[in-house]
Amino acid sequence: MKFRDNWEMVAIERVENVSPSIRLLEIAANNHFKIWTPGSHLRVRVKVEERTEIRTYSLIDIGDDEKKYRIAVKLMDEGLGGSRYMWSLQVGDTLEISQPHNHFELSRYAPSYTLVAGGVGITPMISMAYALRNSDKPVRLFYGVRDHTEAAFAKLLRGWLGDRLKLCVAEETGPLDLKKIVDSVAGDGELYICGPIAMLETVSRIWKESGRSMGTLRYETFASSGHYPTRPFTVDLPRFGKTIEVAAHQTLLAALEAEGLEIISDCKRGECGLCVVNILESDAPVDHRDVFLNPSEKEDGKKLCACVSRICGGTLTLDTAYRGPC
Ligand code: FES
Image (cartoon, rainbow, N blue to C red; front, side):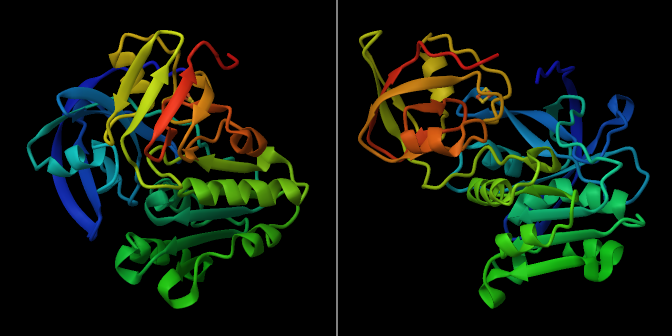
């Protein structure tokens, strides 16, 4: 998965809070606008503590024909800082964006479509729901939120899908029953999911245990979500005789690179495995936030993807000599 980006500076044309923690940004792409397909995302350059970093945001199709890009950003108080930068943008501010990429493509030939979203994971599902709204195939969208105020875009989705939208409000009925959803997918039906990493891992495990083809489970990752709060931690690198600090707003990969250590990386979303490093020791829980390592590798705790995964405080001793498969 190689990203070859053509960066363009564009202006923010409209901002709207679509929930207390999710902000819609409308971008005037003008001559830079490229036709995109459901599941696509933009890569965006954000400023975090004077550094430029890249974040990815799913493109949203609200069902009009305007040649604008729309993305939605959840404000993550315990995140790495990218969402705070995105929330600081006002109408008229500029932003550097890539052209659209898509590695969460909607198949045209599935016998049925089950879409599952947790929280802001709804964003890639919006364009899929729009594309599938008049499909003659069975389509369902399960949308899990904590409370009604978080159900961003639910009205729009209800208009397109009617009762095929299954809104699940956790404070009223508990969280999405992922096992029941997977069990309800008929035959070779496809399931598309985007949400917190724990949700992806659970569905992936249930899907596999049910004997289904992994090719019919498609997912989009949330690079910033984890099992534990995002805390600063220390990294010992005995091979180099160095000890470095990883700030709460920083990825392990960024901290290693800032020390001049060259780590191979590509996706920076926990998907390709190029940035995997060997763990020699950790005195705190390892928070695997990737979808590259399999469950037993995560349980072994001997490797982690430096671009997204970290430990929850404490000290991590690493050997950075390991390189994942190309
Ligand atoms: S760069 Fe792809 S998993 Fe880290």
